[in-house]
Image (tube, rainbow, N blue to C red):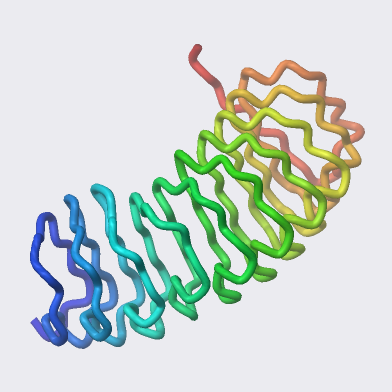
Amino acid sequence: PGGLKVLNIGEYSHDLEPQMFPKGLQELNLYHYFDRKLVPNCLPKGLNSLSITGGYYFHFIRAEQFPEGLETLHIEVYTHQLEENSLPRELKTLILGEYNLPIEAGVLPTTLNHLEIDKDFDLEIKPNVLPAGLQVLKLGDYYNQPLRAGVLPTGLKRLKLGQDYNLPIGVGVLPEGLNALYLGEKFNHLIEPASLPSSLTRLHLTSNYTQTIDSSELPSGVTVIIKPVQN
């Protein structure tokens, strides 16, 4: 139908052809092991969100395969290293379900403000890799690499580190302006008060955290939230 805005395809094993989707389609979700190469113009120009989930996606992705205005891309398992011009130029949200290959400077679009890399990712992030406008960064359960000063962009508002993260957070690592910090089940290092930015309002820990927290030394507006863990 011409007025269709959202389309979920549960199982599809054919090529996507130009003009097969309605022009007004805004969201397309391809489930259950979709693994066909995307060709230029196979997706409608007005598409805002694309999800390819349910299994491995073995084909290389290139910016020209996507509509220029695509803002959200979710790929469950991507098996190639992201390169310059792999991603849509105006992308705002990128979710990679399983990805454990390096990301070099200049690969992520400057428009990106939300990045999630779940599960497998466990490689150190170097300076200038994350775009300056990034506001939300979520790293998966296996991530346990040191975060160094200058790696996180100054505009970051929310940082979530997965359950395996258990490294000290040094002074100057977290940017001023960060509002929320989520630390996982294995994190159990003493948090130096000077390492927390004054802008922080929510510090999420788990019941596995056994270090002493002196509330008088924390930023004045912060609330500490303890998540119960069943061992």
